Every structure is written in structure tokens, then in C-alpha cells.
Amino acid sequence: MARSAGVSTSAVSKVLTNAYGVSPAMRERVRKAMDELGYRPHAAARGMRGRTYTIGILLASIRNAFYADLLDGVNGRLRDTEYALFIGSAGSSEMADQTRLIHAMVDRQMDGLILIAPAVPRTEVVRIAADVPTVVIGHHDPSPAYDCVVNQDGLGVDLVVDHLVALGHRDIAHISHPTVRGSQWEQRPEHHVRAAYGDAMARHGLADLARVVNSGYSDEGGYRGAMELLTSRRPPTAIFAGADVAATGVFRAAAELGLRIPEDLSLAGYNNTSVAALAPVSLTSVDQAGAMMGETAARLLLERIQDRRDRAVVTASTPHLVARRSTAPPPA
Image (cartoon, one colour):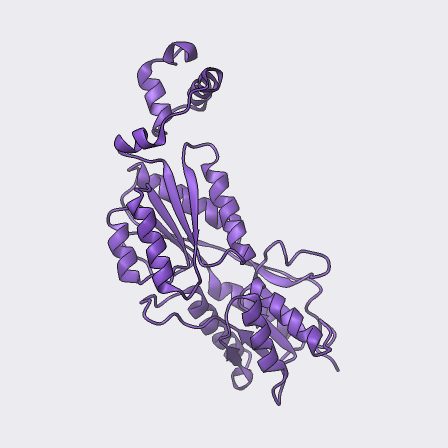
């Protein structure tokens, strides 16, 4: 193959191992020769030489559209590499299931792991990251063992609450996710969002009106939380859902109760997924730049795998609010 590509065998080896410093022109020449010869490296044999060229990614749920945005970013960064992505999905509160999945990825000698808001005990993640390059997305708990990719959640919440208050709302409720007990993560994204919501309400002099329902980041969780709030003695005029997927459940509850959005109830989400932009939905939401977060996670992981960096990094994306038709002034 080296002869066909017109390069040295060492150059071919560098391309096949995705070594750092290979020029795009060299990579293209070798890959063209591979295509012409029908050559495909044997994954198991490559694994025996030290790498399997596989990356495992753990999702809490395949139903959350935000995870699709993250995956788009990861795939985009890996597209021009030799790495294949393998996805494992388990419930966001299923600690044992998530731990089992991660162990399965490690046992299969995957070169690196990307964990999205894991419920796996933090001590276990630190232990695994000491041997397998790991990036954690979402949690704000840093460690020298792994890299973190997070959003500036406090700023994102401020944007939502400020927007709703500017429209005239005072009774603004929040639907959050229950704490995963025993996970040892002290700075999960929902923790930051809940705390920022309370601070923002207090900043506007609305602390006494603040209400949080920890019903979960899912369609069913949003539905249950909205039903609890909207059938209470003092229903809110606006609901801030901590995830777009929960906001879809609020839409369902409001329709069941005969409430119109936004005429009777304003609704804001978080993530700005593709669903939020659909014309029938038109959900006001906080854009976390999910694809960019995924791309960043993949880039940091490749740097670790290729020994180009041994110092832990924490990167934070800057959110912005996308106002749509689901928010309006409260009813007179």
C-alpha cells in the first residue's frame, strides 16, 4: 500500500494509527490508496498493538433530543479520524445500569470514554479515568483525572428568569430533576440550575413565590410536574422547565387542562433542541451550543488518548436565550 500511495511505510503507519502531525495531504493519499486496494485494518489486530480505535459514550436517555445535539458534535469531530463511536444508554437515575455499561466499555478496551451527566458514583469515574482517558459532560465537579465540558448554567437561568420578569411574570415555577442519591456528584447541572433559579428569583424580590418540583427531565416528568403546579391553589403564570424534553410534558398537561400557551401560561425550556424550533412548538429556550460541547469533548478526549496533554481541562460554553412564541405577558 505504501508503494501505491507513493509514501514510506512509516507514513502509512502514522496514518493508520492517527498519529499527531500527519498532514491532510498525506492522510488523503494513504486513504485513497486504501480505497483503491480495498484495504481495511483489522480492528482486533490494531487493538493488540495498543489501541482499538473505539470510543464509548454513555447517555442517560436516548429520548432527550439534547443528547442528539451532543452526539452530532462528537461525530463531527471524529468523522475524519479512524475512531468509531459506540453508544450505551441507561436511565438517568439507574446507577447500577450505568456502572455496568461503563465497565463493559472498559472491558472491551475502548480507548476513551465520554460520559454525559453520569449517575455513576464519582469515585468510580475517578478510578476508571486513571486508566482510561475520560471526559465528563454536564457535571461541574472537576478532577485531575478527567476533563469536564460544562455550560455556564447560572448565566443561562438568569437569562430565562430575567426574560419572564421583563414580560411581567412574578409567579414563575421551575421543573427540575431529582437528585441521584449516592452518586457523590455535588455539582450536577440540575443542582446549578435549581440554585441559580432561586438566586434569580431572590434578585427580583420574588423569593417567596419561588417553587421547584423535582419531577424529572423527561416528557413524563414535565407532565407530572406541570399537573402538580397547574392544579395547585396558586397556579403559576409561567413555568421554566430545566430541559426541553420536560417542557414537552408541560405542553401535554396544559392541553389536558384546557390552558393555552402562551395566552394562559408562558413556558420556557433549556437546551434549545431541534424540537424547540419546530413551528407548532416554538419554545423559548436557552441555547447551550450542544454540538459545540460535543465537539469540544471529542477534541479533549483525542488529546488525552494521543498523549498530547496530561493536565485536566474544564471548558464552559456561554449560553444565550432564544425567545419564541411560548412566552408572552401574563393574562390580565
